[in-house]
Image (cartoon, rainbow, N blue to C red):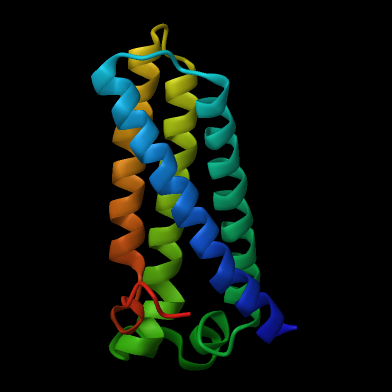
Length: 149
């Protein structure tokens, strides 16, 4: 089960990143051109939330069944913090991705509450940029090659 979940988690990240970039581009274009917030913008926002939350749930399941995360903390305790590889998978990646999904969710909620279309685009763009930055900071250094499958 672990290999299958890991594969789905690995492939789903690409869909999430593609939708994230689409939302980012549409948000910046809408913000700077002061265009309407359309049904398509809303659809991509919904897709972004769906992919982000699905990715988070899969990641949390993997966290508890992976030999490199929660079980390592149970075995090693606080010694995990001294091992860079175990620390990345046991603590850093998990926290950063939770923060990124929270930023995406907050951005969606805050943008929907804006009275103007420009405000909706602006808020979404700001929060998506922050989420994207956190996502890239949370990727382990050995996995930073973007086209690695």
